[in-house]
Image 1 (cartoon, helix red, strand yellow):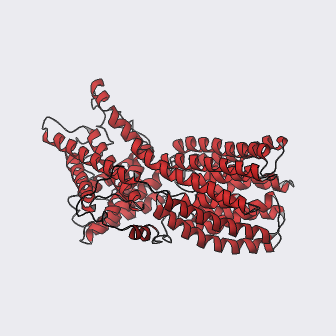
Image 2 (image 1 turned 90 degrees about the vertical axis):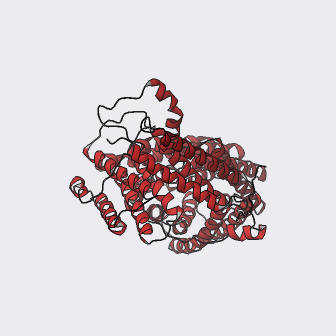
Image 3 (image 1 turned 120 degrees about the horizontal axis):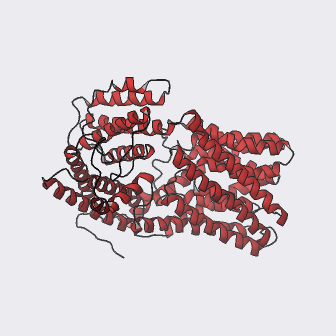
Length: 596
């Protein structure tokens, strides 16, 4: 086990008890986040569920409508992705969601979990494997949101049903229809507002830069988290604009694309320049950035005209820009030398993992997910819970996090949200609604869930809890008291087992990732300094890509390790100095780049 302890390390002196108190702190659990485009996204999710499920319920087969609803969960993925990539991601998710329902149904036919304990144990083991695999893939591809939990839920519902062999194909087909409808609605926005994801991403970058400038205007040192958030927002804007690696020419796009690109380049320049200096009037600049962000969100305004109100010189282009038309293309040898950097830039832009060490760090949360889900499901089998898979799903929901601290926060959020959600579910069930009315209520809950879950997970659980209860009641009606009791026992069991699993599966992968990220950031900085010392010409663009990549990874790795029982035993001042050095060098490199 490789762990370097440095004298004077603030983290190295922490005692185990202090570490447990630190990671179990609920601070931040009830924080509300700003989310753009939540209303339209929630409308799309509700339509995806209702367009397929409601006609089936009206036809008198409400039990079959459940499987179409499971497939429609596809729409919850790819919230902020541009339409071309969203189409690809949703297609893969649609196949995965359909496969979860189909494989779960086949397993239910073969194992028969309702017929005996042996079959129930087999289903629990399979559920744990699905949970771990879904967690790893969602983390590796950086698909945020409920992600793996919804895939697991679809599999668990199908695997714990009582289908016959003849039911497998209809169940799978209905899930496929629901997933296909979700895919169509997910990409149909391109016909109405084709540049909406770009607008949202660029507006978010402008607001993040405004927050950075407001922090610098206060006179104190800008917190690292604010600069990191601004960097991630700017990189996401470039990703949404489809910027290729620097080795390739970029063809001019539509008029609005050029405006979005100029605003993103402006954000990049402000980001790197504020590492050494701020504008003469940062407060006024921040107000202009926020006003421009509001104009971007209003599709009725003419962006090019309003853009002139920003009296800011974007300066040198970003590292993802190439020279204008007529600029020479890089020689094949140069392109070959830069291919590794280009691949890293592509990974950064499309959100893939950064390397083997990163993937190794992601394996531990996936292992926790699998073990916690399996253990919770096993306890539910021992307790003979009627809906035992709720315990497994609750454990997965708590463990759908990056470290122990966020697991504890999820436990707090899920506890509070479940209590409120159970009261809501009791109110609905007390009215004894018809199956059709029940389906309508579920669609309404899906809208509310998707509208609030990105703001705070606890708010999402308020509507997720009754939705799960009503889905179960729709598939197999049961007394309201029995459903609520099973939900309470399953939630308590799952949350307790999940939190215990997070505390017991201790590792130092996250700490090793920080050490590697710090070394990589220092190496990139040294490479940048050598390039700046060379007066032969402008520095290669891939150096900036490497610098920003390592700076972002350093912050992400430190945040992940800070929430573990074994944090990185590195003096925080070393991490702050390395990150600051990277941004200062980015500014110097940016000034040496040729203008478009």
